[in-house]
Length: 553
Image (cartoon, rainbow, N blue to C red; front, side, top):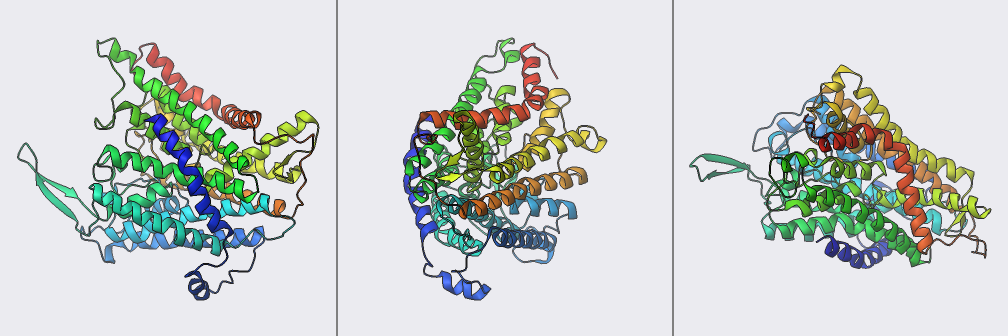
């Protein structure tokens, strides 16, 4: 299954990349002009990086305000057959920031807290818009590398509109219909009543699930309609639906590497980036699967052999659960089909490490590409030091301004993760959150803030997050982790777009071959490792040592 998934993603990368390149390069398309007139936008007007950033921030801050209002007015709005009241203030704030930043961290149970209207008008809409925002930033950075001495990096309103209208919406409609055919509900009914095999009446929540499921996976959002997320049989009825979901998570992120290659006039550049991503991805899958397949030595001592099935769906098993966990944390997708808290310690370390890398192993829609290009800037700088030349990448010289901004983009989420984790591990309000103690309890806290600042949204489990302390700090981590990276990336795009293209010479470092792929993957791995190794030693690595020694906790 792992090899089949990898092969299909590589095969789908080119057609997906071509589709997105057509959107990136197109003039005004049919249906757009009416929208632009309505909001007073000139689609031909280029924006500087500052103008682009202002538009993006206004759009996203307005989204936070709108979603917060929907959640607070839920009790008086229509399509609330369950009669749910307004969401509590801090939980509503946390949820609003979460879905606008493409994080989809959920400190609530969807089927027991939110009305159908809140799920559709609030959460599903933001799933589209947050994904479109990430892709817009990726387009802006691509223009920075591709353009020659042009001040503008595009128009934010055009990029968001075009991606939503001609990519996310049509693809999501097709996926939603497929999911309905496979058994996912799409209804305004509140619930159904069933009689179990024991003769007990059970009320089963229903709702417009398929429409949210389609974009939550395609847009690498991950927020589930149900509390159990993709482990719930109504969100993920079968192995077929599960495989389609895994493919939809990766396909746009992989395709954007080809879009980048076409835009800079050398598709091999895109394939090289994708190759580095897949090297890291397959390494992560191998560790996760090996640790889970080996099982728990404490169970083996009791005569129980086999892989670690704790916290997993029997219908998915060890291999699929390991693959799904690696896929979702290699991207900014918070969906789960197994309890990450129940993974073996080294297997649980890989989702953490994926998030620590910035979720660029394919990564979120748009965010994965611009994150890996930031690392590419660092890698060519290191290569330039080796060969004694001014570093350059796809014809653009990488100078001190680009390096400073790249370092800021890498450091901001790291500071948010480690700083907020440190605060939570010394304050009583933070220590009250984890269920476990010792290294595993530390992992629960570290995972929560890693998930927030990396805009992933998956939960390790075991942490009580719906408290004033965690609602506020996690929201802060999500906001800083999202926009603390986007703003320096846009500044990089603005600086690159005005530069002239430097022809490759005999002394230029090649950025398409095996050496470059190895260097890029190594820089990503080493920088992530150096930054977060101490925290991983205190958490999952210490947990692994305890389990290997037969220590219970």
